[in-house]
Image 1: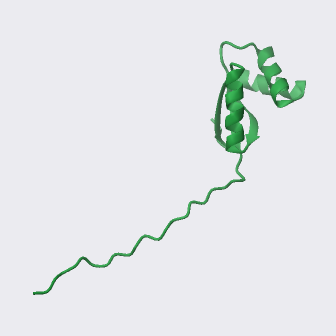
Image 2 (image 1 turned 120 degrees about the horizontal axis):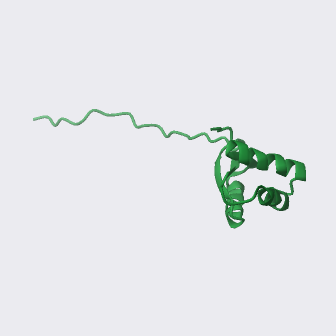
Image 3 (image 1 turned 30 degrees about the vertical axis):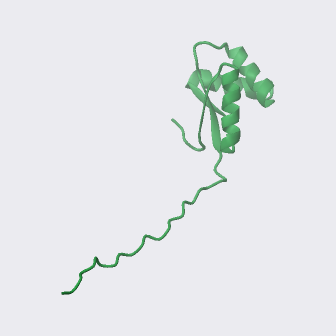
Length: 101
């Protein structure tokens, strides 16, 4: 009597996930019905050190388009910025760079 065994199967080779660490993450600030536009501009100036002109332009983008990517960088740094923005009462999220809409 011969013993039959399952046929040999090829072991799946380990797969490598290639991450692109150079792709920046974005901090998105969303429009809200609570904060004054002047306050949002002030937060951008005081927290990020943006000029009045840049802070106003970003604030207007938030106001007119509903959101704006106000900073880019490493995921952990953008997450820390999001927590800080929440502390200022702003609605903020983090997403991979390049996504729009």
